[in-house]
Length: 132
Image (cartoon, rainbow, N blue to C red):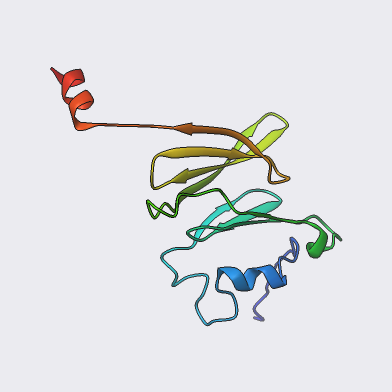
């Protein structure tokens, strides 16, 4: 019996901007501990320590016109970096949430506009007081 492959092409994400995230090297997508990803129905967000690339696709669309580059304003003094990335979807609204190593939550629109910035500060003293 012949083996059958059933695949459906979702879209193309190939673009020159991927080289900034390490593309072009063998294993760049799998073997890079600093590369963070978040996948949605028609979008993928790829982030390294200081850059986020959002790639959108739909059937028959041009991948070059459907990408957004986000370079958050991170503190070079504190060696701050992107530590988490996730899509947030509320009905028809979709945004990208970034967490940083200094405790910031950054919310970006699909166009790359910063919508919200909030810091979460935890100290050992405040945690101890809550437990007592």
